[in-house]
Image 1 (cartoon, rainbow over the protein chains, first blue to last red):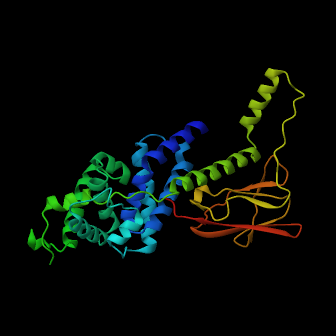
Image 2: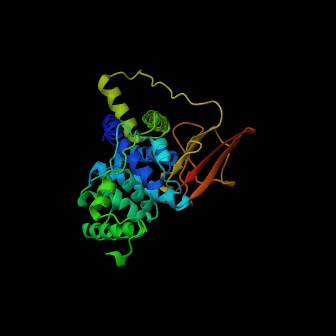
Image 3: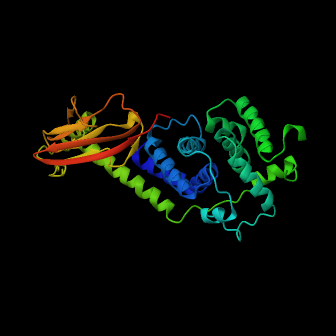
Length: 171
Length: 159
């Protein structure tokens, strides 16, 4: 890849995915400032590594893989997020006028429950539901087999229900 | 216990979590940091011995029959300088390849004098590739003729 090709690809990546990576980092960490920093780091790592990108996965899932690694490293150091409120969502860049959900109570409950999950459950739920990735794409982004994607997703959903206060006896 | 939500409601809530706008200026910051990285790399390239580039240069000179053409010398700083890593940079262990400029002086990594530096084609410029560098903060210092400069960098665990 020439320098020019690399610059162009990098620009495409930033234009296309910066917002999504920022959202992913935010919902993984619950911290707008950390999400900003992690988004920057993810793109810089991608920039450094673009020359060696071999195209064995899509550049999109490759970028997600980098961002998720950054988030996991951050969470190892920092631990669980603490604040889940409408105010912090607003501070993080949510404009209710543009994106008014009709199920806000449900969303906030699910969001609180998400924060109680380990990162591996949180990330797979975000990738599947929030980012609407396919199983194959999640397998690439997480570097796990497709069968593991399905079983982990199923366990993550069960853990989410548990965190929402629905124990196994409610099933 | 909260009122039980159906699976469908839970999934709808997950899909409908607010889409956030990235903070103003984030894109500009990303491009600025990438450009800074890019220009540093270009400078390193200019200082590094690159046989392929030299061969291409010779070939071009021969083809154009312009043997008297003098290459423009790379402008190097006059003061001692740690060229790479940039101060504050975060790297993986295999990315650490630091370069100092300033002549024959004392170069230390984390307080230990460095041996095994390699001269580049430019006098006064050295490259050193540390082995088995542990994750964490590190500091490289060069002292030449009573002048001292240093750069700190952070090495992360390999992904």
